[in-house]
Image 1 (spheres, rainbow, N blue to C red):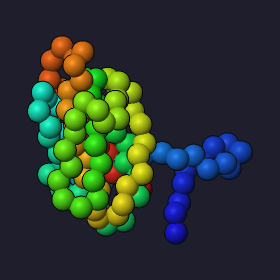
Image 2: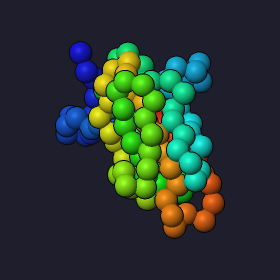
Image 3: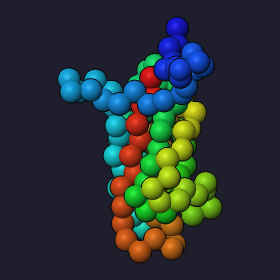
Length: 114
């Protein structure tokens, strides 16, 4: 059963389940550089969505089997703007590559949503 947070009128709000003090919850970090880098592990077996944020402009690629490879022709993400992407439980991995207008390397944060 999916359980979502709700607003004051009891309407569902999709949100991120942040890792708690006990370490529950997963945030994958990926270096965003001039060459492609991918998540070391796929998302968890019960994860159907991830929140993605990069500290620099980049391109992202998704793959549900094996290692993905990002190129500058893949979907572009601006810096410091979070997006929610659909994930296949236990399979999805994301890869990132720095956009040509990025002035430095950065980090992508992939937060598993529950």
